[in-house]
Image 1 (cartoon, rainbow, N blue to C red):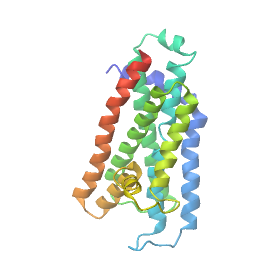
Image 2 (cartoon, rainbow, N blue to C red; image 1 turned 135 degrees about the horizontal axis):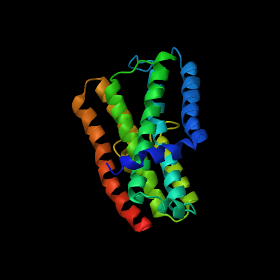
Image 3 (cartoon, helix red, strand yellow; image 1 turned 180 degrees about the vertical axis):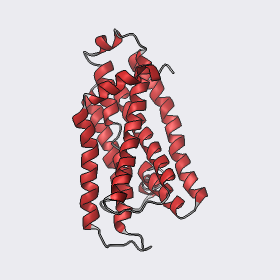
Length: 243
């Protein structure tokens, strides 16, 4: 409940960055639309329209970068010259940080849902299990936020944290083999499968669509386990940085 008391203030702060929020929506829509028209009529080896496969993958890819607005707000409000003004306000700053995380997660998940609706209604993309896909999107959004905050709390220079968050997003896209095949060895095999949140999320959606419930939950639970562990790490680093 203490977190909820700061939600209104957090939302107002986020709305001030409306250009960034709009870009996080408009850019994915443009890219999904562009690739959908290019891949129109092409199917995978299993007969699934490549347009549908690409849309699902891109919706999940964008979640890798969903923590950017959260890390910016927390750094700007709690670690810059704005710190004194925020600390003078009548609410708990730790709860405010959690409310930023909550609002950021809700916004990222909402963007994912909007992209799904747009892809289906405008581009004709057919989604399998909507509830399951949204659950996976939620896991990816939360994981991205936690990882970005770990970077923010771990390094003193925000620019370095930004670059690390970009490496996190782009790196896992590359390791998933989206642009070119990865070398075949233990390292790339691990980070191209169970060590990669992107391939885990895509795999979880695929397995659920094929009614392989056990494997779908297994891959989703790896994401959930990573969230729990990294959340603890984030708390330790955050308390040390804010203390």
